[in-house]
Length: 253
Image 1 (spheres, one colour):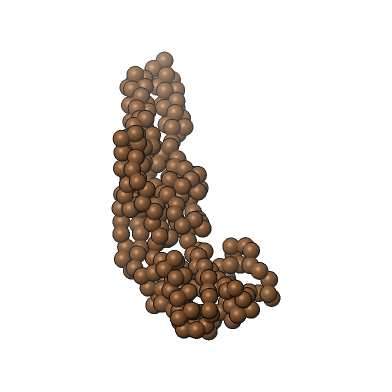
Image 2 (cartoon, rainbow, N blue to C red; image 1 turned 90 degrees about the vertical axis):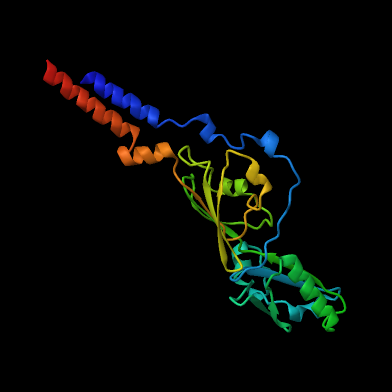
């Protein structure tokens, strides 16, 4: 009986092991990780919050075309800028002072900036115009087997999935690195993909850079699933085996 229990414990421990091949990132980066980086600028989506600043050689002339900030104080924190930004409507529009509704459909922030600047000059609003458009509520949600799951706001125009996972404190040892689930919503269409972080091949795909509102889910790996379905954790196993051995010794005296 004692030998059987020890054998069961040994089998359980072996079944719970994770190999280096399952936990090391970018194992083939020397062969698949090189290549030209294709930066992506996502199109503006409904519910995006934009900071739109219009400037001119004559600051007074540009004032009517900018949204007034609270009590005339310059917005410095991200939270204040979001409250005072332009929210893109569900029909892909923003409402600017003087200019009225402007369509953002199928436009990047750079394209919207150029469109507004051309409109200001061509319609005689300003003889010269400098327009800056920035997305200020870009966010990514990371759930599952990571150290700090949650929703994270970022301001970079190009952020990689590895940088995003860094926000979440990296994967736990129990995270499934070979099958990261990502969902992405663009122009009312939801896409789902699976990413293998142990290979560098994804670095040359459209999913190397995240986009606003991406959802990343790290599922538990096989050993974690098996231990969860069998007995909660190793400490519990050892306690039960120890108790069984004690009972066996008492009964066989």
